Length: 125
Image 1 (cartoon, rainbow, N blue to C red):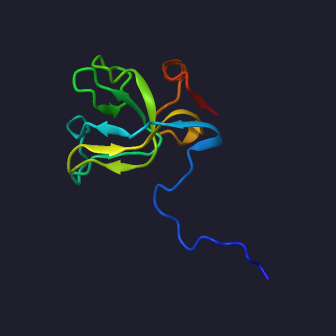
Image 2: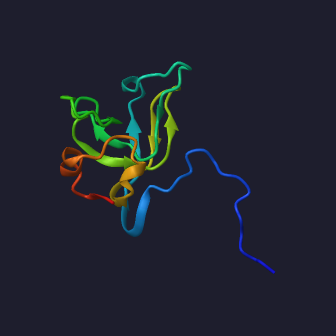
Image 3: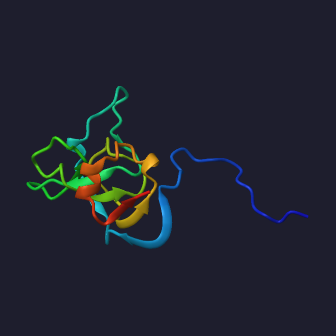
């Protein structure tokens, strides 16, 4: 008799981004995402994928997706987004990782030397 559980279905975007659970520090009380700074798609959704590096905008103190060419604070990411979120209805508070070992292939942006240098507390494996 097999008593091992088996998944009945898979939830969209329910993939693992952590490559290790040994050293993980989450953001206390989450981060507030600035919905006005996120571009809408053809359906009007403002979706930010799980694993996206997030940066704090200097003027507002809210977080936006990492933008290497930015000059408002969005070029300096400090947090990895913990789950996929749609901010079409306004600002949202969501969890993130400050310290973690992340699977680089599952990050929705290119993981290059510049990104690695800006996020010394995140190990991209």
